[in-house]
Image 1: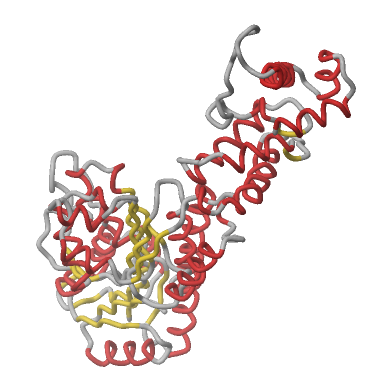
Image 2: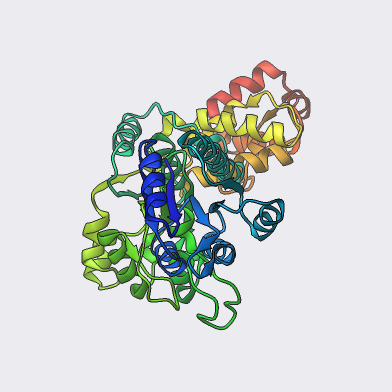
Length: 443
């Protein structure tokens, strides 16, 4: 449903329009003059406005660019008893979306409102799709064989249906941003925008203006008004990534917004309202930061409504190879390559690795292997050095078992050849014997 502003100096028109639009389920604010209209537009976000061209001694035409400068997305419908081609053209030139002449019927109002509602839906869907184009990947398939991860997914699905704040905790690279997008898509707000603010990526002195917006002239370089991320995701979701790194000064203003749903733009003292759901994520121990006085205690308790810790990849090893296979298919398609899978040795190495960078590290590892790999399958020699455990490099004559020297020699030959047949030829043994040696040494 739409947030609609009606500006008309005739009380009956305001009353009739408000009733007609309210019966369609829309939220309507009706005012009689441009000053009140600007004040309401500064306080809350509107999808649509009906603007009368004759507002007493004032011209409604001049109000069009003012409303658009504050809310570029607003759709303005001009209403007037003095319809003419010239005024219609001028209204459209100034930024109006449509034009309706008095007297109009409820059916005309409903028809134009439904059409604009569709336009706003499509704009929101396009915004979501654009975000997904940059974000979506194989890791967005939220499937797991691990019981702990399955419980996490189930909990977040239930939480998504509510309006509660969700705090996602976990190591870097565990997929917190993936879960944030999933919560938004599972929620009733999925048709509205989702804004993402990476707190460490924005300098602390700019984070406030990034979140809450600013007006022209608020600081050096502010040459245009900026509505901010909160206004941009009205009705949707605001995801605050790595909130533990948020500057202390901004935390107080965020707390106020969470409590009252009100905020101020930088350089403007007008209180604004926004209907936005908050999801936060952190890889830091927020309770410890509270003790260290680096994070506000009251903000922590406001955020800690539904708190979920996402397990690291090393605690759900049963998911490593299914995810690796998804990444392999994804990067093969992206790089126009055909690989049949992983060698047994590569699978063993991938499964045993501790993955300190979690899913992000796994993704990067598979992408590298696809780009640099030359065989039919991803082998051990296609994996980066940190994946392959360090093997002792004894010299001939050292006091070590003969099997150690043999294992080292076989590993080096396999790593330097392009196929197992070539490795067997170099070693002077047949493939079946090489296969048995590999199985013995876990190569």
